[in-house]
Image (tube, rainbow over all chains, first blue to last red; front, top):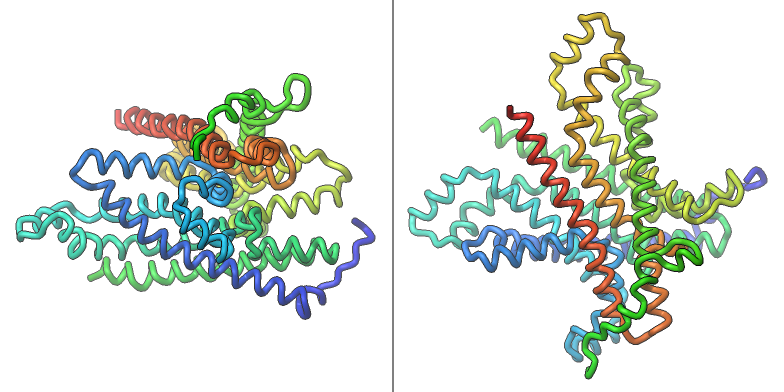
Length: 235
Length: 232
């Protein structure tokens, strides 16, 4: 420990900098794809959770509880190692050709996050006064159309801050993709450490990147809360 | 496809999944998962309490470092915290068992989240309580210790249970540094048997689900009970 010499130059330029940068890009790509898909899936589950049919509601609830109460790492392993038995052959072939690591991580992150997003959307919807729904229904909209035109547009507005925070969670959770060989930020930091024995510098670089992400995103959420939601309250 | 779901890989290794090589060797599997979660939960409760109290301190010199530390940890993925611990602890203190490294990482990480729960709990106690206690002549630490914390901690119990559920899920990351908890045991059995990854990972997902869902339900029940007793 005491004879450790710091050498910050290795991470600020050259090959190792390129590794870390490509790691950051992979992290952002994986998180962006997963959050978009998770939002769509989460929206679907949230609507199902509030449906009239008991079976549909029960299915949505089971989905939520199962994926929220299982570790993400296990879900990643399941999709990466175990999904070939439940997926059709042509999908397996396609996945094997395109590099399954990234796809498996994206699938796992999407499904895991969608369960959390669905609950965020649901609490957004529940915060809309139920007279809105009654008024929409009495104006002749069907349940789904009332959701689409009246309730969801208002609910999504309130749900944006928790959704942006979910993006932050996805960015952090995507670090688990390194376990199946996706070369994202944490993977590359580890890689730099094992090539250079400069663990302190490598981990600091990754930590700073994650921190910068979380500071930027938190600032954006605060700005949105102040500018958009307060304007809404004042109006 | 003739054996679509081979249950024997589970039944043959069931004891190994549950307790590892115990009692003839170290504890593993579900047993170790729960051990890591319980010990980390207890440590992070105290860690969170200290961090939480420091972060609401009257003195900026205490408050800001505590807040900086909390936000630093909350901004990092748990995996990064584990790597930091794995790298720093041996450098600082010499050789440390993997189990303890993971416990340290989990406790530190969860402390930061616990501190937020504790601050929210303290904020939830009406100001009148503090004012009344102060006006009876109690010092500020006495107000905190005798009046505010006992009420706040009680309200926080459901959040603590939720944090424990997160911990159970987070212990799966111990697999990365070779601690033989449930996920590690599963990958071992998977590497040995080769042919049944679907069965093995579906099985441990169900095991984790049963553990976590039990505690999630407990937390909801406690929440209902607490809000009911508060209403009276």
